[in-house]
Image 1: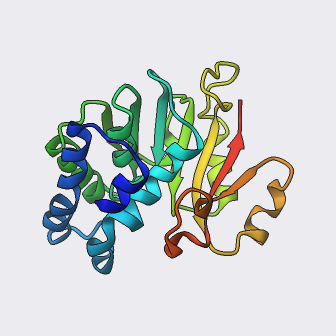
Image 2 (image 1 turned 60 degrees about the vertical axis):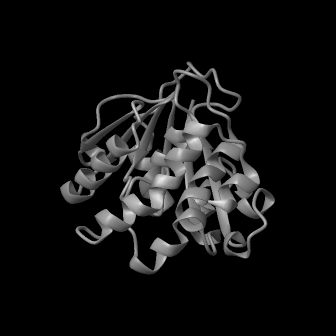
Length: 207
């Protein structure tokens, strides 16, 4: 929790919601494994703060529509929904058990700006201002899933509508086909913790 407050000014409600995250995930993870068990103790740095790195790249304006593609345990969508209560987040995953856990957690947190759905990426019909994703698939696959899901010509945030992916490790080969089309930002530019040294935000405008 201290790592979050080190970088973000949160109101009392947001602080309360963030504090509830660890006990909620500890409870649900004993039933359905949605976060690696060794990460539960580090959930604030490895999952919450990592997710909130996106808010250092772009400050979403009210009424922005965001798709969290392959949300897994609810990251990055749930922390960002706490940060931006006037932004709508649609969290989707193909695995029903994960969707059930995410639904239980966001309701326990009292978040009213989230909807959750079990659906395959290929079957999504709605369009969004941004697609966010974390540790889901190769960037080429993310691009193929996302290209028809972004609203075109309707950008109103500080950056164009597009795909925002949290990625880690050596990305040279994975991102080579998109070299002139993407922007890569080291998360250590935002957070000093050593865990973030090889973590990146990869942004591809699709407006």
